[in-house]
Amino acid sequence: MTRHVAPDHGGRQWWKSSVVSQIYPRSFADSNGDGIGDLPGVTSRLDHLAALGVDVVWLSPVYPSPQDDNGYDVADYCDIDPMFGTLADLDDLAAGLRARGMKLVMDLVFNHTSDEHPWFVESRAATDSARRDWYWWRPARPGTTPGTPGAEPNNWGSVFSGPAWTFDETTGEYYLHLFSRKQPDLNWEHPDVRHALHDVMRFWLDRGVDGFRMDVVNFVSKDPALPDGLVAPGARFGDGSPHFLSGPRIHEFLQELHREVIAPHQRPTMVVGEMPGVTLEDARRFTDPDRREVDMVFQFEHVDLDAGASKWDARPLDLRALKASLSRWQVGLADRGWNSLYWNNHDQPRAVSRFGHDGEHRVMAAKMLATVLHLHRGTPYVYQGEELGLANVAFGHIDDFRDIESRNHYAEALAHGADPAVVLEQLRARSRDNARTPMPWDDSPTGGFGSTRPWIALDPGHRRTNAGAALDDPDSVFHHYRRLIALRRDDPVVVHGDFTLLLADDPQVYAFTRRLDGVELLVLGNFGDDPVEPALPDDAAWTDADVVVGTGSGVSLGPWEGRVLRRVH
Ligand code: NOJ
Image (spheres, rainbow, N blue to C red):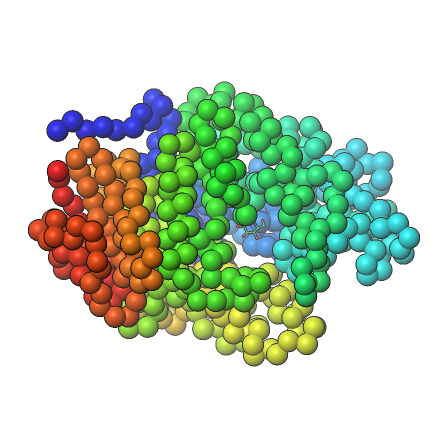
């Protein structure tokens, strides 16, 4: 049998067969006893990642930052915050990864800087400052008194509650911030801004990093008129997104960045665009290799399916909608482009609580979710702790939360009369802090994270669920992830095979096939508490198929069970 393997453009597309591990450094491992994870901490735990078998580490931001948004507010793009270590520590980490055959991807936050970045400090100093136009400054709305409610230049709301504008006394103008008021948006219309950002990328490439994850990069091109957005019924602010989401010059900007920085670089890189609200049609353009923009996008359609009017209004997931969404992206990016595959990251509640079961079936559900995700076509991402099947945390009080988005939402909702108990319930289900508790390494009082009280509470569940225990247990979620990652490495059908969704209308079973040159995989996942006997078109053909991942045989599934079957035609 001849094996067909899709061309990988002379090794430049190494990321197609890779699995990425995302590290949130402040919550991974604390080496110096200050309660905050750091780079030497990450380096000390690389054997865990090597045992898992991942190929790439994506590091959330470690740059100097006032930490208003845990480092997504950058005050210097070319250094390391002392809280995390030094540039030498970063080099050590990169060397440790290289020694284990892994690559390093840095997180670039280029839509905005910190308000403490020297560029913004200079920009805000005077209306004729040389860097004034590096940010979006506007006078108050005509006919209003600057600095009073409603005088903002337009009606956009910030992602982190409140208006997207802050009044600056020094010059009597407002600056735009789609996120917190300490995250002013850069003005990419200005060529010097783009060139300065290109230099940042060159700095890191020259230092040996292998690629970038680009934070909300589809927000960087804005309609310079910054028009008001539509106000939905009951909403306090207008929706500015039509004026900055995949805005007028976004493709041009990304092509320029590729031409100036990525193409001239000798070693093949991986560039991932984080793109909230991106459409499949746009993602095809962003990831078409011939257009030279980014290698893959991080899209949010599937993790937005259980949201109501806002992310805080959770509603039950309809599995049919999840299947329809993910399979549409599989088909849409089959011939051109490429998918990122993820359930979790540092902005999402834990998937096992959200899409699975975090009670008696937690381990089964975590494994099943992993099986379904990792057998799709694309590059899978494993967010720290996902490989242990970590669940959401039952934070008791608002003071237990650290995340600016969660705290601002609580304050704003209460200011508008919401019941604190109801808002706390929302936070428990949806807060980003669910993903940010310290990584549990062992069952000691500090969970092996560090020697002191961490910056955010450790989940008491670490006594039972921790990396040490998982490594010792051949049936753990960890070893299940390890097997899935090994299967991707060993069987080309996982990377290159085609994708066909089965049982699209079944509300409980996720089923699909992958095929490549006579090899066929059947992937099954039971999203329910009851056993199920899926009515597959040719189930008899699978009765004696090899079980390559999971337990049992054939197509019937126990509660939350997943399985991968393999046959050769
Ligand atoms: C997306 C990041 O993932 C998130 O953590 C951050 O708050 C926003 N972008 C703003 O940078």
